[in-house]
Length: 331
Image (cartoon, rainbow, N blue to C red; front, top):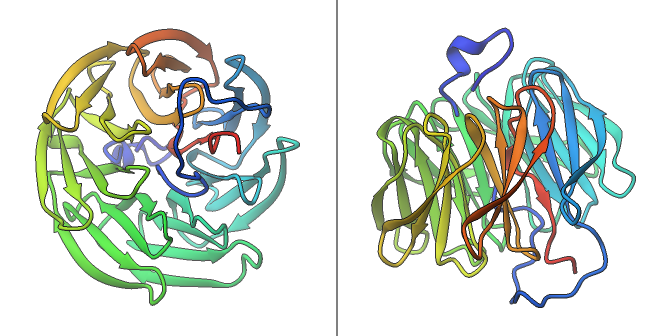
């Protein structure tokens, strides 16, 4: 992960969870409330807030130093932002889109995810090799767990009972019981897993293996896995709603690979902005949003046609690592 003063170590590190309500959806889904995308701009310490109905930036919020990770909660009406260099979490009210709190942590927070019930914020501390579980109603109440080396991406199961952690320098996924904060098992994957994604039902887990240029597609029930080839230096991934496709950002190709889950093969390669990193879905509109570090913008892809729809200018060094779209089918 690229940090302003720690860029050498973190350049290589590179949520589909939290508050999404998993239910059926069709292209004719109706809704009234807009969706939003919260894009961390690591180079200028801000968050760009995009209205996904209009694909325009409606606000820019000051964050801490070197913001990277994002986790959103529809239940809490909050967006959480990890600030690695200031060692804190910025909290944004998603109704007013105003900064309302800062949660201080002793460490370097990277990946974030929120439990489906909104009670717990999970934070990956990159340098201290631990996970911090923070009570959202009482942020001073925390639990900790030592995991693998350089934990990055986090996702939690739809029932909230299992937390998955990508440990970049251990080359594994730690499977954690959230009730006891204990490691149930470790799943070996490819080299330098960073981004991680969970399908809406919780059946499929995807580990993005940066230095292997692969995805490990893992059955979360049987733990069997399949290796899928993608582009050069992949970073993050997101499933579509019906779990038939996985979208993967390739930072050195400036592309997104669309993988067909059934065949295990790439069905499309989409050209996007420069150095694409974070990716998140707007299920109601059937779009993928991709944060581009190198071109300081966000690419919007129609997941029905796999065509680039538009590009939205954001801030310097857009990152958006995690689940950054707030749109639980607008319910």
